[in-house]
Length: 402
Image (cartoon, rainbow, N blue to C red; front, side, top):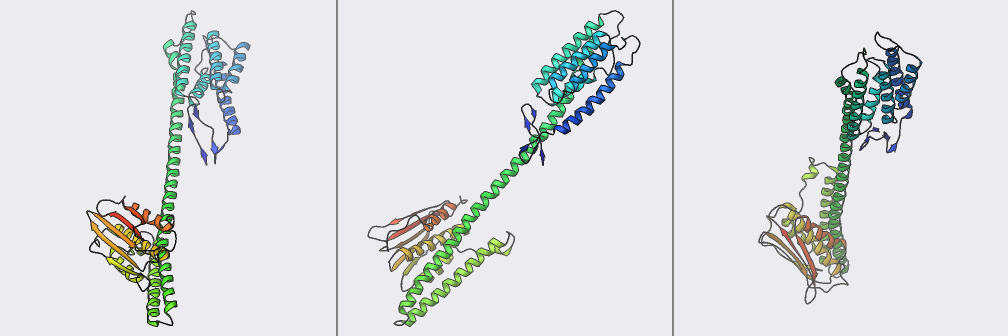
């Protein structure tokens, strides 16, 4: 697509897909047509030989040739063209030629000065051209018997093409400015869209990690319990397998809800799928609690927290219990969710000992920090005195999420 770009010296060359291109053939053709037309009209006026003015001769046509040659330069070197054509018209006037169309070449050149330059150059050119035209008018009018227009009028006419060129250049630069601003706005929209897509990908990755990591860890532990107790304690094995089935169904339900959110727009049914919250923490604890790990829950209040805060609390508890299963040999853990002083305090602790060195740089702990920060809260975690590990999150339940 062809583009016009504004610069301090006027309009830059046209460009196609970022490649600078100057349409030389187009410029040459337009210049040739303009020079031919203006030259024909000027020649007709020069050869008219009206009464009271000097008749044309070889010197007049010599000046005409110089004027036409200067006019041919008006696109590439407008100042030089204005100087040559202006000198030729002044020579005609002082030589005794008077005509309405003799000023046409210098008017075209002055228009080129304004349309291809800047305002300061136009002002200086206008001052010089107006002063020179007035001086030539005064000098020519001193000769007796020579009809000549008023010097004041002669000082005004050079300003007309300059003013026209300023208007045209200003309109082009304004159009180029709006076009560039539209392109910048489009680039900003594209960057914003890319940023939103990146954030959504991170959010969905965190959501899938919380669902899959917790469920697979819980199912692995329960499957191990069932395998160990299959022959000696079949009832315990059946209970563990039922928990495996329940965990798989819950994971499938959450994954289906997540996929619906991805496939449906905001007005579709997938966007309305309920997200787990504080009320579902009890079911989460019951699902993971068993012979291998007994989990005690304290939930005196907090079920009235906003949905976004409730979801963050649920995922933090889910990830913390997953870490207990994966990294701790503890047989007991405690979960506490309580609203105090306008904040939801979430604590998950186990008594240890650890299976090995805790991995504090994994995605689980990072995900907990991100979820807490998304609602304006914070997470603290680390070993406790006497063994074990504790995760403590403070989530505000009042005001706008961060």
